[in-house]
Amino acid sequence: MAADDHHAIGGARLLNLIPKIYYTRLADGLAFFVDGLGFSILHQDSSMAVVARGGAKAYLVQSPVGAAAERPDLGVDTDDIEALYAEMSERAPQLLHPQCSTVKQQPWGSREFAMLDATTVCVTFRQWR
Image (cartoon, rainbow, N blue to C red):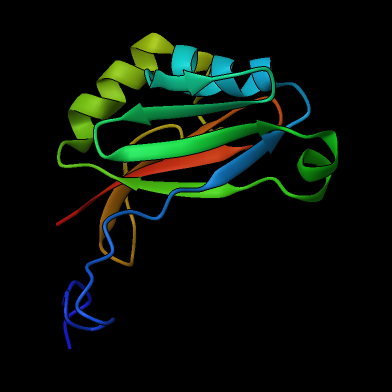
């Protein structure tokens, strides 16, 4: 059965898996995702924001307890890794992950680079060939 077979679970097709990312200060998450990665704010209140860019979406939640317990490493697929890398390296070069700061071919088949914020949330962008 194919991974995207919409009949696999009761006929309902799953569209997106949307992470919830905890920050001690919501402003830190907004600085990374909005200012650094170019996401737009779809919703924001005093302790939570929903951000999106293209088909990628995340919930940013202010929770010191959650932030202390978990620092996620997220993956986002793209259809043009070179263009995205050019944009990100110009927009926020200080956020390029020190261990994956250029587009690299990986043994598992993707080309990727990563961005890392000051709280160690990592977003790896990849293109499969």
